[in-house]
Image (tube, rainbow, N blue to C red; front, side, top):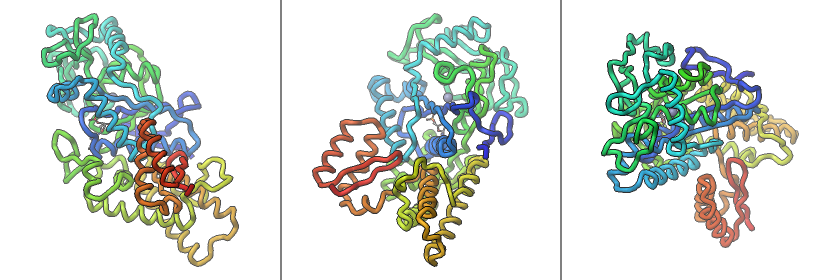
Length: 469
Ligand code: AMP
Ligand code: ZN
């Protein structure tokens, strides 16, 4: 069964497939590292993670890129307010982001390129655009994309339907601008005093790249001129993704990304959760209220990605109860451990309807509904002794449930882990987070402490197990 997903560009639900017949190559716009990401941001990143898991549990290879925006108006402003260098500032928030990603059990992208690490590539792309007559240096020394010179400008966000005309009488220098303006936008920003030490040499004088050019240049380098799918939250459709397309297609004349996957917003009382509105919750805020990252993950998957989703503590509570049911079921079938002898954990067995539901436009809400229906049915059958006693049936059940957990990215500790003292479990959890963030020395310290307490930690792809030494 093919995996189908809504495509913002064609406004149709279309098959997701690898252009090269081998690996689905996809690019996700990553975080702007100027503070902790909020759970609204994580709605987008968790859905992108499930997108990858749907492919991989369906036997498909993937290549997942996610960038780090570490130079823009906001990162410069905030690092200066703190009086630290841009690198030190963004490095701290990038580490925090990766730590939160591990806590949420997000698979690490295959590459995580940064804007600062790709300044020459951005300058090279701007040069190509200037040489092709698609960009020009303005009287302020900044270089602008000439929107009029790219006839397809506005196709993704349907500017024409919104009766927005494009003109170069206006120029836009800020990284994020009004949804309703389609002015020429800055590719290279001439050095200003408020940029401090954050500037580079270029053929147009000292300055720094604009925000939109970073993703285009990074994609050209790491994804090629054309690739399978590009993703972000819906707020990125215009202007960011519209501008990304223009910057690349104006010089390559090829389709940039073949499929556009946008995730609707996480809302708080009817408004988008965002830093600028101050209505945000971070993972730490939620932890203080007694909920863990897995509950956040569940909440974020409880609605279809095409509809806005409301964040409430009631729904976190409901997530907590739902996860408890799944953990009990895992315990009942001893499904936390991968059954011995099962080669690849991609056989859904009795849980096939869950996979089929998610392959249809990644409706995680529908798939979770199917999962709970099956858990109820199977639990009843087990209770009544109606489930086949045949060991192969039980193995299919465990393997299938394991595949479902992989698909949604949930993980339950095995009963063996639960027997370990709380302190040891805590160390093991901290070690896991450190390991995911590639902080090897910290991870080793925890392993040592665990060993001294008489336990051994054993890792699998998504989780760990504690075994008495
Ligand atoms: P930023 O760090 O602001 O660049 O955003 C990182 C990602 O989070 C982008 O893909 C945004 O579109 C997405 N995003 C921001 N706010 C929300 C929200 N409330 N709900 C879902 N996604 C969001
Ligand atoms: Zn981007």
